[in-house]
Image (tube, rainbow, N blue to C red; front, side, top):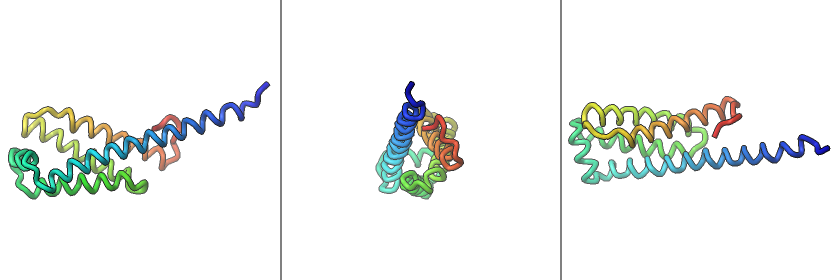
Length: 137
């Protein structure tokens, strides 16, 4: 009869590694999206200038959102900051969703997807820091 510990341990180790890879893939992908979006706001691409003009808040909001997105993207890549960065980005995407619906009358799908992805990072990083890693990404 095989020893249970020798047959179960490699499976757990494989799941742990897969979860770590999945978590980092999500964080790096999300960081790339927010870095690109933030950079486009900071350099003032015509699309972003027009979008924020339609919002009616002025240039200061474009710079603030762009800087927050870039800072959040960097924070996602720093393990100690990832949870806080994801929380901030989720809040930013909540604001973007409301702005799309109420002010711009635009499709909110993209900010909702990014909100959910950032929220997933918050949940996974919360479980990781509190020791509840069972079944998480």
